[in-house]
Length: 253
Image (cartoon, rainbow, N blue to C red):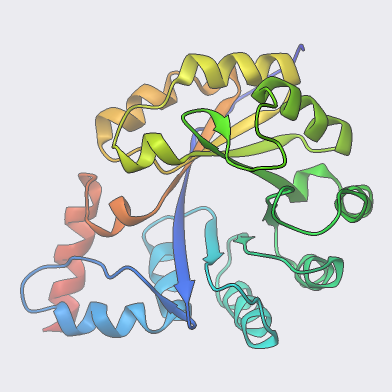
């Protein structure tokens, strides 16, 4: 499927993964700043503000609790109001109304796993109402096979076309085996799936070093245009982060 790319920029998306309203990861800072980063992990609003100061262009809030309750919905909106960049949300959405609430309150995008969420019909309604640019499909595989009993044996390519029929135009791809065993993503496979389906790809995790990032960036014009960084971001695996940690340690003195 033909797509035209003009002036594309590879996007690195920091993830703030929350449970009980707190970030599960703590930034590894300079010696003597441990307490500062401990407090920051407990205050996701301040953490997101700091990520913004570190030049994040968008932030993904991932809620890993089973229940996306009212308190979380309010917290997400507060974070969105506190930063001047778009916020994305990944969660175990229980119904259409939760998605509608966030999208109506200026959340840029939500990430939905169609195999773990509410009905396909409701997802299709969401896409029609809010457009495909605001609804991403989370695809979770294990060794590039769908990690779902109902879809066991269904070819990944066929599933991509089902998602395309629903109206999705972007996949957030997470291969459990690749991430768990710290392997490199099969970017040629993802490129091929992107080309055949006409859907762009965001890679979830699996990029842990600058070299990984450069490798993925080479596929920018092949449909793979962004990556979500999670725990590796908090371990300061990327050179520019050392400068930020030193600057933050100076402010804490």
